[in-house]
Image (tube, rainbow, N blue to C red; front, side, top):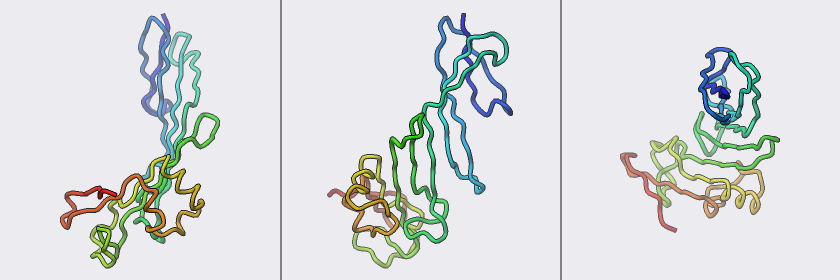
Length: 176
């Protein structure tokens, strides 16, 4: 009978939990790193199988995927500080397999396609979302200097464009 170890948190600080199974089953582990501001910086998915007996004996870990996250800072044009900017997923070899990109309303931007002098109350609410395929189309067409592109340049490539009602309790996904 094999023993499968599932580590929920950092095994050096939080211990491990084992489950007996008739066959060895891979278990996924997520390790996370944080930026000083408490924001998620990275995550690593690994799987491990233990063939031995005893606490952690014979355990072997293999990285499956890693993720890296970037955030807007105070000098950003398309997000407020701490808004998620990119989410990058890498395979086990470190090759980028998915990249997503996000833009937000900022102070002075309004909600709605014709608003150019909004009250700024929508600051921090998502405006555009680009999933992996949309982001690939955007960078293939307009290059990787995404911070230099205007909203009107990136809009045709977005998966989602969000507008909010005045109370910000509801958002709409306008039809093309």
